Amino acid sequence: MAYYGYCIITACGGKEALQKADELKQIDILLTDIMMPYMNGIELAKKFNELFPETKIFFMSGYTFPSLNINELSEENHVVFEKPFSIDRLNSEFSKVLTN
Image 1 (cartoon, one colour):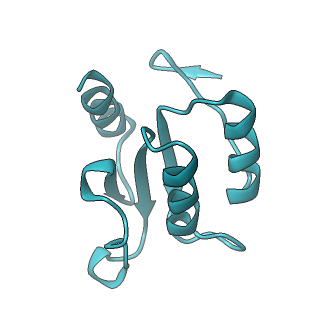
Image 2 (tube, rainbow, N blue to C red):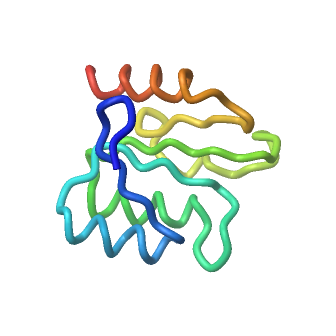
Image 3 (cartoon, rainbow, N blue to C red):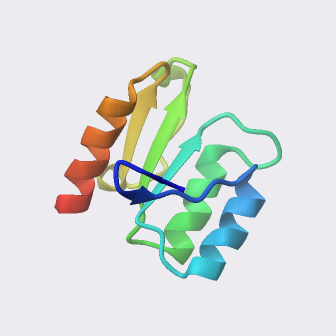
C-alpha cells in the first residue's frame, strides 16, 4: 500500500509488527499508538530500538502526554502526535525525519 510515496506495512498489534519488520530487515519509520492491548506502543518501540536502532519512532495517542511515560526512549529517535492530527502534518513530519 502506498500513500504520499511511502510504502506502508500495517500490523494488527506489536507482535505482528515485529514479525513483519523482521521479514523486511529495515523499517524507516514506525507509527504506533501508545495504548494497545498485549504490547503497548512503548514496549514495541523499545523492541524496535533494539532490533532496528535507526528506525524513527512516531507515537500517537488520544491521551494527554504528561500522563504518558515515554522518558525511557531516546528523545532524538521519536515524535509524539496527539490525536486527532491531519495526514498532511504526519506527511510533513515523515518528510523531515527522512531527509535528515
